[in-house]
Length: 117
Image 1 (cartoon, rainbow, N blue to C red):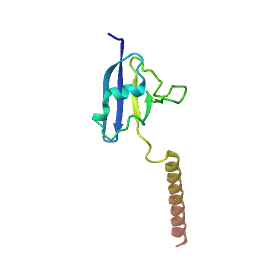
Image 2 (image 1 turned 180 degrees about the vertical axis):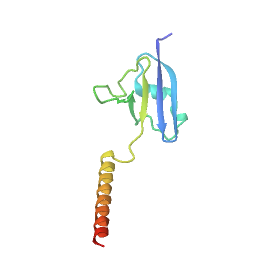
Image 3 (image 1 turned 45 degrees about the vertical axis):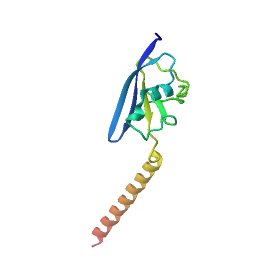
């Protein structure tokens, strides 16, 4: 019997999440492990062939980690499947800052109007 490692595959939507525990053969890549987990049976719209993957919050293919197609899972790894961003975080922060600036300007104008009356 081939040697195996115990891992988890995790995916979450805002309203639900699923963690699949499984044993995979030593040498299994992260991408293959996700496919072996059959997590798509819980999330049929999930495209595991294109999704970004990470290990404990570190995206594969970044920060010195091998890409998902090359990274060989290790005992205890939790492979996380990342969703695409709905909005660019920098754009969201910029928009909030602009709205706050406009609100402050309106409050100052209202305070000036109150003083002049």
